[in-house]
Image 1 (cartoon, rainbow, N blue to C red):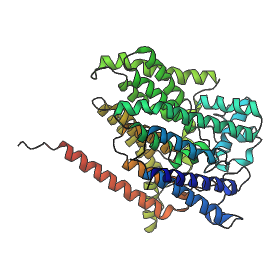
Image 2: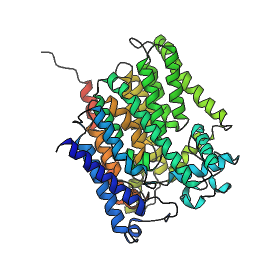
Image 3: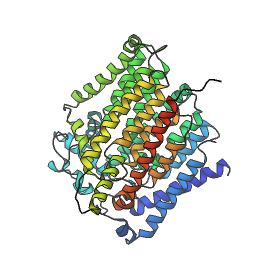
Image 4: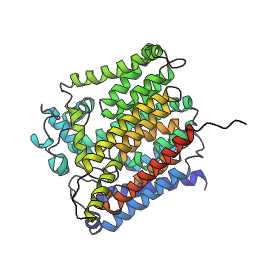
Amino acid sequence: MPHHLTRWIGLAGSALLAVAAYLGGALPHSPLRATPVSIWQGRHGPLVVGAWLVGTALMAWAWWSLRDRVPSARWALVTAGLWLVPLLVAPPLGSRDVYAYACQGASYAAGINPYEQGVSALPCPWLDTISYIWRDTPAPYGPLFVMISGAIVKATGSLYASIALFRLIAVAGVALTAWCLPVLARRCGVPVRRALWLALASPLVGVHLVSGAHNDALMVGLLVAGLAVVAARPGRTGPLLAGGVLLGLAAAVKVTALVVVPFAALVAIVGPYRIRALLRDGGPVVGGAVAAVVGATFAAGLDFGWVSGLARGGDVIAWTSPPTAVGQTVGYVAALFGAHVDALPVTRAIGMVVLAVLLVWLWWRARTRDPLWHAGLALAATVALAPLFHPWYWTWPLTVLAATALRAGWFSVVTVVSSFLVLADGSGLARYTKMPGAPLMTLLVIVVAVRLVRSARAARRPVPAD
């Protein structure tokens, strides 16, 4: 199909998603405990579900069909921007997190430490817009974003104006990504047009980063900017320090950005890997990142309680997280024999141990290979092995892999599947598909583990001499 026709098909999908947002999106006073059945039985239920399903399918198909044949970088940017326009002016879609941002900002502006008390302590003037599970939990976001949230609420005093500013910040994060991503693509020998298309035009960006106004957009933008500065000026102390600061600011929005800092230290090295070179060139990157995180924490007048707040993400149980799915499946199998087994704490703990080992192995391997690509793999592993998975989390590895991976197949598949996991109002389908979702995810984990073991064994076999 001609690429210009694909452009308009994707735009039609974006427009349908905007319709779904207006009729049944994550509106401030929409039901907080909606189910797929109650949504379907609502006033515009069939239209909402149909617009969401067809709109997502059209955008996903248009994005997928051009992943390897984008005409140019300019065409990719114009098309991605065009697809964002309907969602930029639509109500929040796919998540209610932006209301939590506003309430946490209101708490901070009122002098309450959001890492010690939930938003119900003020109480937030918009408390009824937030899901019940998050009303009494501490903020899991970094001090930089807490300061931004407080400044937005203090400046506007309005929920709707706050949402508009949060969305503009998300757009700024996407724009920063678009500006800096070509540097990484050229460094890794990846076509810039393909990198921009994969990173910016997927439904995840329009629905969750822009319409949903998630702070992941700002985090990813700062992360890509930091990597770009380091990759463009290896061996030069000033730029390396600046790149580290940008990575630290990304972590001060969401702490998971710290995963890429050790890999950025390898990117900074001029010449082959040596301990001395790592200390000389990687030191400013790590130092800048640490200084930025500590500086943002003290500037906000807060402590490091935001790190412990991350653990509350485990309150949500969904099979989209592989360790969680395995724990659920163990419980289901035990129930067949009349036993009650809560395996979630064990499987989730195993997942974190595996992640720690995998991150160390990836870093060690990256010393003699492309550290930028391994940074993308590290982010993918972090998302896959965490106790909780939300579709917008996949934008972290997607953006870095888009500019560093020579093949786009596997992470493009994950992107398309993730686009269909959340309904227009933010209801996660994983909550209602525990069976067969958890067993199928467990089966996928087994298949992937077997393939990785076989691949590792094949790599260790000696090559026969001619």
